[in-house]
Every structure is written in structure tokens, then in C-alpha cells.
Amino acid sequence: MLIAQISDPHIRENRAPIGPVDTALCLERAVDAINAFTPRIEVVLLSGDIGNDGTPGEYAIARSILDRLMMPLYVIPGNHDRRKPLAASFAGLSTMYADSPYLQYSADIGPIRLLALDTLVEGRSEGALCNDRLDWLALELAGAERPVMVMMHHPPIRCGIVGMDRIRLIEGEKRFANVIAGHANIECIVTGHVHRSIVSRFAGTIVQVCPGIAHQVDLDLTPDAPVAIRAEPPAFLIHNVGEDGSVVTHRQPVDDCGRAITFEAIFG
Image (cartoon, rainbow, N blue to C red; front, side):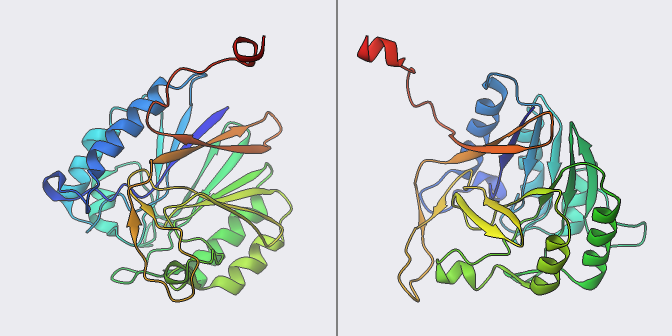
């Protein structure tokens, strides 16, 4: 089965752009590309920062666009989101327990178990997993009898872009690594936040960071370089899940790159 992952649309009130980037238009194009992809994509993951300021108006715009998807959508919050208006706009979101504020949940998707984590610290840019959230994760992993995909907004790795590394998953990082390392059936951890396609080993599994569906973060690996955005071509990820739950991930540009030309047509 094919699972698409999009991340960080950063929709603003009144469809306002971010710098030179029309983020609402980028999300519309992404939805169109996902709907048109063949073979059919069966599920879409959205790994946070749906809105830029977490307002009901932003989520209304995002929802009006995302409602055009022809397949189920699974959403988690990012650091730009706010839990209450997000949950009010996306009715399928659930919390860990009835009295919990955290938007964490699990779902069986084909042969894999999706564990969706909430790393949001409202009003802060960095991510956190407190003991309550990590206890839930440990319990879910203990009961998982199939391969697991963990989805979270903040990556638990350093990527070398110093300004983004300062706001990665900070609180709970070590315990999270220990929990993950204790389970051999975790196929991958899929994240957003950095607005770049990044792959790294972590705690015995793979971390895959999704590029931004709108603007990208500039790839400046100079120490103490300021964080900057760049209008690079937006992209999403396609996770190709095998019958055994194995995951192979492809980066897919949003915009049409022209007609494919076969090797035979080129080389004879």
C-alpha cells in the first residue's frame, strides 16, 4: 500500500503568503498531486504545523483544502499549532485518554500500526515528550504485534542546520530513544518541522524527515547560520508499505515535472 506524508503547510489567515510563498496554493497543489497519483495512494499523514498561528480561521482554510483528499487523513500538531482549535477543526483527532490534553492516538493502517505522537509545547518552538506521553508510547509498543510507524512533528535527531537543531525534540529525548531502542518492530519514525528531506539512523531504526509542502528551510550547514526559508520546489513523501510491513520511502515533487521518457525511447 502507498501512504503519502505531507508536512508544514503553515496556512495563514485570509490565505496570506509566507514571504514569497503562497502556502494555501501549495497545499491545494499537493492535494491535487496526491489524488492524481497512480497507483492510488490509500492514506495521507500530515505531520504538523497545519496553521501558522493556530487560529480557527487558519484551520478552516486548511480543512476546506484537505477535505478534497480522496483518502483518509491522519493529523498531528506541530509547534505552530494549538490543540483546542486544531481538535475542533479535525474531528477525527483523539487524545491518549479521556482526560488527557495530548493529541496522541494509534491506528492500524494495512499491515502497519501507526503511533501518532504529540510533541507540542504551546508557545514554544522546541518539542517535548513528557512522561505521560512516553508512558503511553511504551504501553502501545508493548502491545504492538505488527510493524510500527511512529509519526511525530519534531525530529529526535540533529540535522546540522543549527537553528533547527536548537528546536528539535528536547524534553524527553533520552527516554524516547530508550523506549524506541527496546522494540525491534519499529520500521521508521516519520517527522516534519525542518522543511527538508532528511534521513538518519536513530535508536535502532530510521528517522525520515518530510520536506515542506510549501516553503523549505535553506540548507545552510554553517555554524550559527540564521534560519532562512527558500522557495525550493515543494515535495511530499510516499511510503511504499509491503505486505510484511516493510517501508520504502520516496520523495515526490508536488509540481508536474513534465512527461516521463523511457530508457528505450532515449537509448533504443
